[in-house]
Image 1 (cartoon, rainbow, N blue to C red):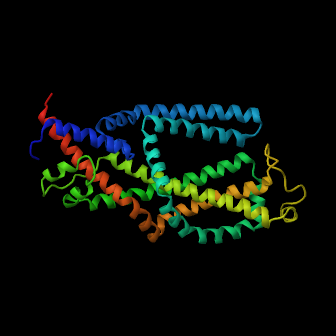
Image 2: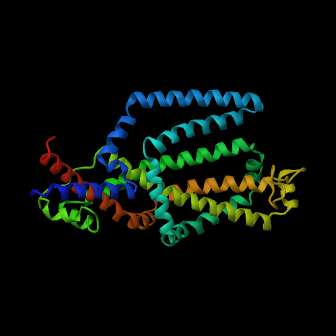
Image 3: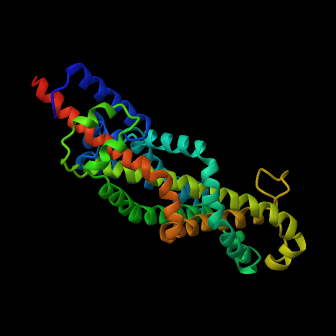
Length: 337
C-alpha cells in the first residue's frame, strides 16, 4: 500500500472505529478486541461461572425453603445464573453495543420485517390454533405452577438459541467467502475508509476474519433474529388472549378443566382474562417462538429473504475490517514507537 500522510491514516482509523461501534461491531476495534480477549481468559471465565453457579444454588435453595416450593427455587436459581452471566456479557463483552444496533435496525426496518413474519405466521397460527382448542393442552398448561411455566418458557428459549448458534456461523462463513479482493472497494463505499480502497493491492486476498470478529457477526445476527422471534411470540400471545376471550367460554373451560375453573389472574383480577387463558397463551406463544426459530433455520426461502436484507451489512463490515487492518499496519510502520 503506498504511503499515506500519517494524519489521513489516523483519521481513517478513528473513523473506522467509530463506524464499527455505530454498527454494533465492537470486536472489530483493536483496543476493544484486546479488552474482550482479556475478559475471556479461562481463569476469569471459570471464576465467573463457578461464582454464578454458587450464587444461583444458594439463592435458589433459600427461596425454595422460604416459599416451600422447589419449582420457585429452581426458577430463581436459573434467573440468577442467567442474570450474572448476562450482566458480565453485557458490560465486559460489550453485548449492549450489539443489542443496541439490532434494536435500532429492527425499529428502522419494521416495514421489511412484517412480510418476513407474515410468511410463517399463517401456517403457524393454523397449527397452533388446533392446539389451542385442545382440552389436553389446556389441562397441561393451566395446571402448571407459574414458576414451572416460566421454566418451560426458558427451556424453549434455550433450545431456540441453540438452533441459531448452530446455523448462523454457516451464514457468516458464506458471506465471508463472497468478499474477495474485487469486492472490497464496493463493500467500503460510503464508509470512512472508502478513500483508501483504491490503494489496496489489486490481487490481495482478504484474510479470514479472526475468531472474535466472526463471533461478533454471529451475535449480531442472533440478536436480529431473536427480535423477530420475540415479536412473533408476542403477536401470538396477544392473538390467543383475544381469541380465547371470545371463543372459549367459562362453561367450556369448566368442561375441560373441571369445577373451580376459570380463576382470576393473581393480583390482576380486574383484567377480563382468566389465569388459565393467560397460562395457555404464554405456553403456546413460547412454543410458537421455538417453531418459528426452527422454521427460519430450515426454510430456504425465508433465510434468503432475511439474509438478503442483512448480507450487505455483513459484507460491508468485512470489507471495512480489511481496510482498517491495512491502515493500522501502515500506521504502525510509519510510527514504530
